[in-house]
Length: 329
Image (cartoon, rainbow, N blue to C red; front, side, top):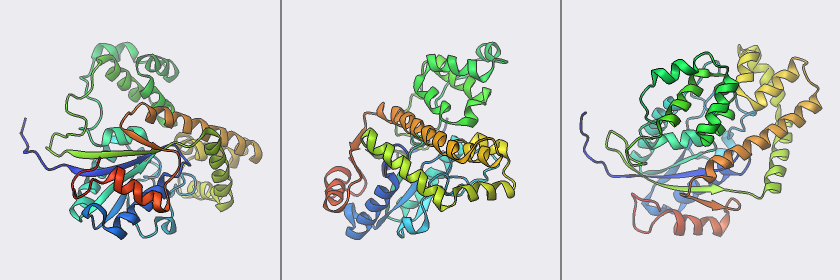
């Protein structure tokens, strides 16, 4: 195997948390503050999205994709990079995101990874997905079993991975992906490289910030956000996507907003029932996201998105070490 010389670590900030918690607003606020004050010696900051559905073109209102005005002049990456008619893999995300991070650093800016797809973030800085050799005997034994039975097996083998796959409707119906997850869990090992080191010699110094709101506050934000998106035209967005070739079946695979709104448009449910069921589904998804993130001890949790003087204090004292341009805490 070719040896690569060690490279100086790239500093990265990761802002994580459940849907509707205020991650995007905090990321933009941090980026603007870094650029305004030139904190840590950076010229500015750019944001790399880590959302498994915001990569798709046209899935805007339904995914809560940040709007041009909400970006407030901050450059964003990994939005609108994929055709929604075709599945987008975590491995492809990793390649594109790392390329974006390298470009941001080369411009003298701080890369900020922001999103709620924990599997994307976990896969980003290591050498891709968990390493485990194929197990032909295991695959033969599991081949032909229905997805429901495979998911039950995965839940017993690796609950965290089961949580991630269960949150993705297309993965839930993909026996190959579920069997691979069981295979990795059964192997009982992950990649042996240090967590933030890749085979090309690049390393990362990553600071993790999470937003964890009280349960009632998050539930209210989810309710208000869903109502606002319905008013903005989320139903019309789904109808337009279908008219432009996105099948009802594919919308069902994309989950949550696109699943339930497509059912409403097909006359399978009433609008009120659709909205109530969708809100419950989003709250359950937020809970699964928190289950994923809470297992990571590296995350520094905030009870709310920092603003004003609190934001400046957060950046200076928690994120960027004084007089060091290449490392974060």
